[in-house]
Image (cartoon, rainbow, N blue to C red; front, side, top):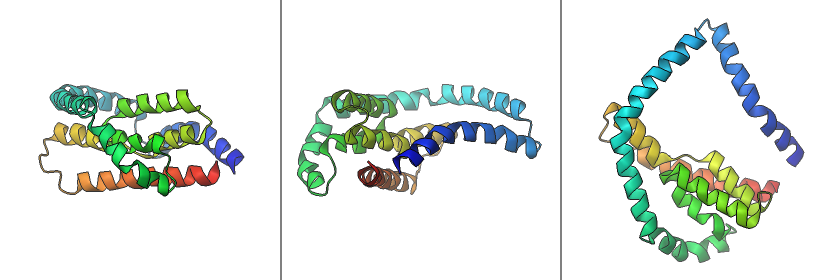
Length: 176
C-alpha cells in the first residue's frame, strides 16, 4: 500500500498542474490572460488585508507566548494518548487552524526531533496537507470582501480541521 501511495503522491501535483491548462484550453478559456488578471486582483487584495493579518499575527503571538497552548495540551494529553493519538502531534490540532507558518515550524521541529520517516513525522506531514489555516482563511477572505458575520463558516471550518486531524492520525496509523 505504501508503494502505491508513494507513486500517487509523486504524480498527483504534476498531473494536476498539467490538467488545469489543458482543461482550460479545451473550454477555450484564455489561460494566460486569466492568470494575469487574477494576479492583479491578488495584489489589490493583499494590500486590503494587511490590517487583518497584523491583528491575527498579534493574537497568535499572544496565545503562544502566554503559555495557553502548552496548558491546553497538558490538560488533554492523557485523553489523547488513551485513544492512540501521539501527544507530540496534538499541538498541530490547535496551531494548524490558526497559523500556517507556526504549524509548519512545529512540524519541522517534530521532523527534526523524531525524523521525517517516523510515524509522528508522517502524521504531522499528513495533518499539514489535510487541514487548513481556517482562521487565517476566514480573516483573509472575509476581510477582503468585508464580511463581518461569518455565520457557520467558522464552525464548519474548525470541524473540518478536526476531521482532517483525526483522519490523518487514523490513516497514518493504518498505512505506516
